[in-house]
Amino acid sequence: MQAPQQPKAGMPFTGIATFARAPYVPPEALQPGQADFAVIGVPFDAVVGFRPGQRLAPRAIRDLSTRYALPWGPANPGYWDIQDDRWYLQGCRLVDLGDADPLYTDLDHLDRSVEHVVGAALRAGAVPVVLGGDHSITYSVLRAYGELLQAAARSGSAAWFAGRRGWPHGELPQPAASPGSSPAEGGPSAGATVPAGRTGPSPLPSPGATSPRGAVAHPMEGMEPQEGARGGAQGGGQGDAQGDGPGDGGGRLHILQIDAHLDYTDRVAGFLRSNSSPFRRAAELPYVGTITVIGVRGIRTSPEAYAAAVQRGNRIVTMRDWRAAWARRADTTAEARTGGPTGSGPGASPAGGAGSRGRTSPGGEERAGSRLGWPPAQGDDANPLADANPLASFLAAIPPGGPLYISLDIDGLDPAVAPGTSSPEPGGLTYEEVREILRLAASRARVVGIDIVEVNPYLDPGGMTALLAARLAIEAMAFSHDAPARTAPGS
Image (cartoon, rainbow, N blue to C red; front, side, top):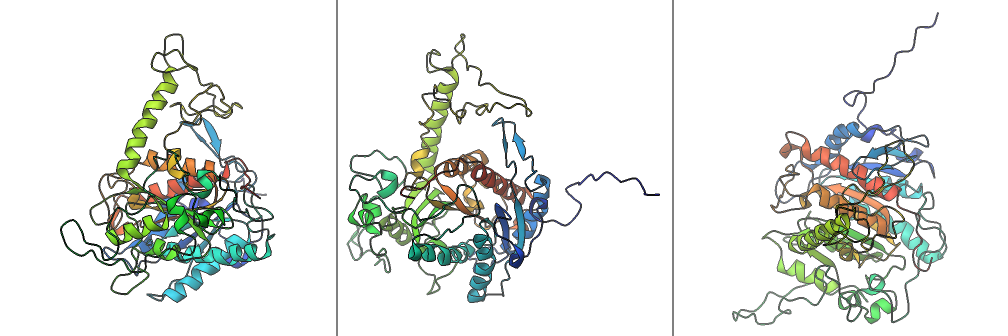
């Protein structure tokens, strides 16, 4: 006689802690088309300049991610977001590939190990979701993209990342060659209004120039951009027209960095690979395009690093820039909810309040917009603010539909929200602000990689920072997975 089957509760504190209870698959066993996303841990913190402990973050994030477990696979029902009034991650397939295998301070070993695991995900058509580790690991991850990107550029028709809807298929996107390219393709055009951070010539003295106080400015060594990169900084320069600058979309991987720091230091006492240098090294990779960083603040920014980033054409959005636009967004959202200042515009109720947005129960079929009136409901052509989000211009350097890598340093958030990090800076982003950045990025470009770095469990006794990192990873995947399939310009 067979014993009755015991119902399985699946409490989050039971079982093996893979990320969100995704099945563990060894990198060598991952098959093409098997997964939409692949979680990879990189437990490395050997080049931290302040307080180490990030090597323990992948394990801590996985442990708390079990709170967000789903039955990953084609039958996955996803989750319903009460604020957005919609389902996310339906049918999403997620796997956990385990960790890369760092060896003390051996950076060559780290690079090879990371390239092995990340490369396995990319060859199978899965988006790598990398859990650091300190921020230096981003450079190792980006190196893994080189083989596929450069092979595709050589062949002109390689089906790289072909295993997932919305990823590039067939030929790589070709850069726009016309002088009248859009700001997103070649930097801001003449006369364009782009209140989106700092991209113009450096306001600092040129190398060897005399400062206003009469002192000789420190020479900024190694600041010359890659061939053709200067056009991105000036907007529509010759480099962009030819498709060799950081602002074009042709075969390049673009980067969105959410961070309190530039992480663009050239070297520290001759050392090139500290956790303050990953994007300086990334900018030297021939296939890296635009770099947009949001959330920069603090009093320890290197003038040399800032000048070098600006000269290359990186888009730098300080917290002051961001907050000013966030306040404008709040104003436009309020107008959307009330139908304008007089309460008589589209969507206004007879009393001048917010009209019904058609909210549905989780079982309903109609998709509504956010309860807060932003983003507008899909197909909401009557909403005059549907394309008026003042935050969107911060991402204007990223070519629409182009491949985008998102690197989220947890110290980009305010330490009141994410205290468990080694180099916190007050006055940072809120959870809602980071969530909006991720949503905007996924709606503009094809997200082909994500990392979350600089969580330090030693400084996170309550686990709040690790839990937040797990949630942001889930939501970054959700926005990317549910973004409409898009085609890059020229593809």
